[in-house]
Length: 120
Image (cartoon, rainbow, N blue to C red; front, side, top):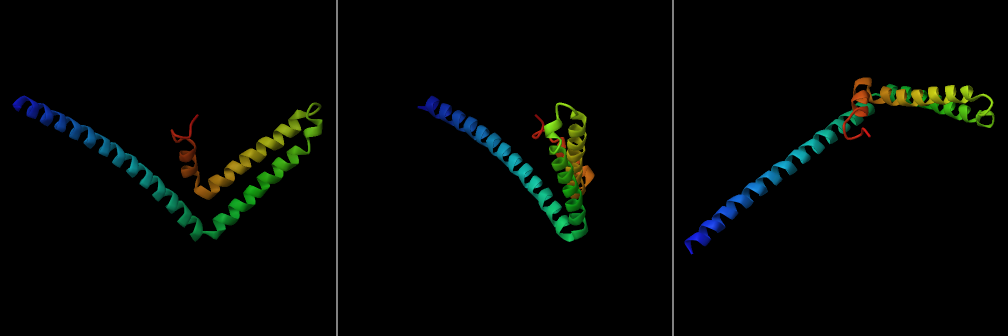
């Protein structure tokens, strides 16, 4: 009887430690998600406060769309002159990416690109 009680007590302590570790992991994950959500909310509030930044983003974004769409006009001659398509498409892609850098801020955009979760 006494041994069974000691065994049950030891298992209870062991289970309590496991539960505590799992709770700590869950709390850490929740904290990370809350911080990420807070940074997203801050970015949205900065956007709402600055319509000029939104206008800059829109202008640069549409220039990028124009470059990519004009690159698609060179698809029929892709075999003959691939450099025209490649140049316009590359500049269009860079322009689209830079429009998002204008929107989020260059440092924040660069940090979001190299987040460990988003890397392949």
